Length: 331
Image 1 (tube, rainbow, N blue to C red):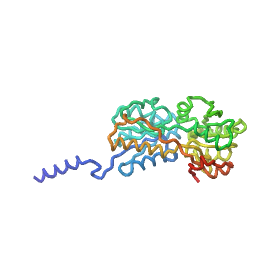
Image 2 (spheres, one colour):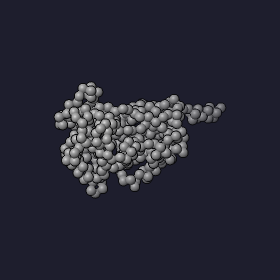
Image 3 (spheres, rainbow, N blue to C red):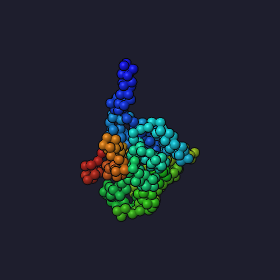
Image 4 (cartoon, rainbow, N blue to C red):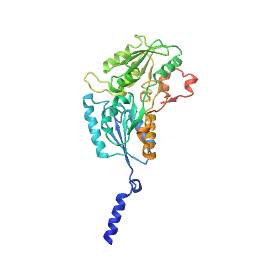
């Protein structure tokens, strides 16, 4: 009789849901980049805020902003092996490289996948129309940024430069957003899209901006810039140098490069908003039982005005009421 009671007790424990036993189900974030990159840190914070304390969050970093492209497949394989070890209830794929390299594997599983920070068309990565995959798209607000510059600079700029590094994310932006065009006319303003891969070329491009006829620079990512030895240059170092040497006002598409010693700001995207939206989709899947295939890919936000007051003062710029009434500040 005692043996029967013990057996029954063991079976009851084995059949008890983890939540009822005080153990939280695990979700996994496979990040394309690294935690020191503010975009990633911010979107992870957004995910965790939405999920609350109901889930254990594990993170694997592919580190593809700093590692050479030759290492990407190896990092993706290590991420997959980590997934197999963890066996999470749901996986977040942060940014394009994670989606590009891991979609073929996850498409063969039943594990729900929520991507975020995707600059390219998910179809190019084979992620469209998959029953277990959905997510959040990221689109720089380039048309709206030009409109803002027309108001803020109190004149029609003669020429604006969109300045990026030459990494995977930039190539996706140029392909998806600009359709691979390097010369555009937006709201009547001539715009040139420049992609540079080295620190020397970045510095030359910035220093000659005014001489080349540009009234303003709007920066995208500059996370994959290499020095003459082929070593990764930290984003903060590039931002500080550019801030100190640019001959024209420098604005941004993303919040992580807005600071007293970086860019002025602008109508920017926030990593945290991407994470919050991805977290909302995940909760629909985990708690409401909605299939990812039934959830259309989303865009997280329309952008927010975000500025450095130090930089506005440096350039003698005063926000008009139409912008100031909605603006937030980093300092």
